[in-house]
Image 1 (cartoon, rainbow, N blue to C red):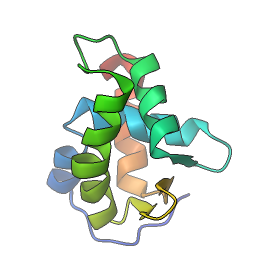
Image 2: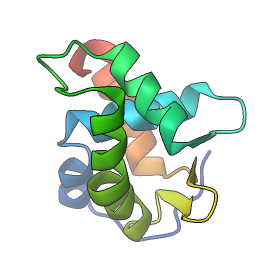
Image 3: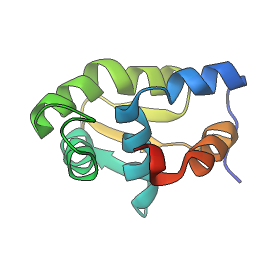
Amino acid sequence: MTRDKTSLDTDDVLRLLAARRRRVALRVLLDRPDRTADTSTLAAGVRRRCEPDRVPGTADDIELQLHHADIPKLTTASVTTYDRTTRRVSYEGHDEVDALLELLGARFE
């Protein structure tokens, strides 16, 4: 079981996971033993998992979008933590997010 540090209702979780790039980024983190990656590694993982028509751009483009859009949303919701100095993002776990990611499976990446 993961921590539930914030009170996210179903609509909040659906909004967080509405963006494919965020869903895939969380899956990349979940697949790592320590659930942590720097933004470059995370972006490369997203690029590898998704067809370009589903998540457009190079790994550099994706890293920029993660840094400026996705990671701040996930961090504000306490789903991830982010160290701006090292550019490392860590998945903190959240029961509702975990449940929805499991329900969606890889089918919606």
